[in-house]
Length: 86
Image 1: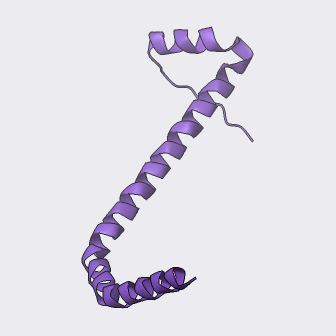
Image 2: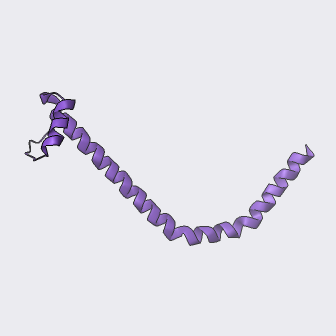
Image 3: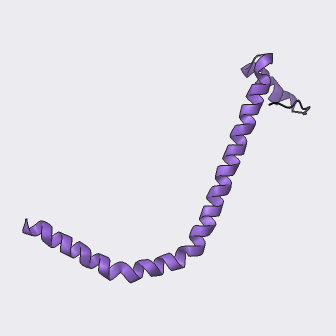
């Protein structure tokens, strides 16, 4: 469904819209631009939330990696010896 609205845009912006789309396509062009803007804002908000989460868990992640470092090193040594023995 669609909804008819009245908006005010700067003259130079409307000139660019008119140059890019014929009169019957201008609403579609503006709708696509708004959808693109909203999608980008949502992606940026997700990136920001993920960054906060990663930063909040950074110390725990480092501690967990340190706990497993010896086991991981041993596994790599075992794998390397198997490759050498082939």
